[in-house]
Image (tube, rainbow, N blue to C red):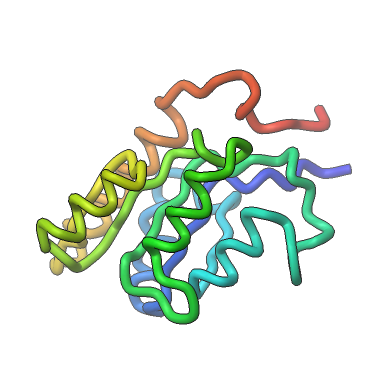
Length: 154
């Protein structure tokens, strides 16, 4: 059985930003294990293995969630509330990648348990570099507790 571990969950509703992020992650070799959710409801269903994702194993933890603040259906702050209130998902790192530079958004995110807040650069090259560095740091360099290590079938 192949290893279907998703290392990055990108929660983003803007098609251009999704494509830019995927391009940057491909450059550093991280795009093969990424799942894109286009709204907060889909992200929660994916994380908690319900709805369309009910066949997904909850034992396969996401290594990083990259979350935009402006999402349809279920807002990012509610996604964070649910994620960080559940002991099974509380320790998953969440980085907010957003166009907002509002202090209130940043403060609310950190109060709910985000691990980082990055304002999306408007320049393509800078955006690509930022996503690349974020992926390298949080997926390849960041150390995780053993109970959150991805399971493999090797």
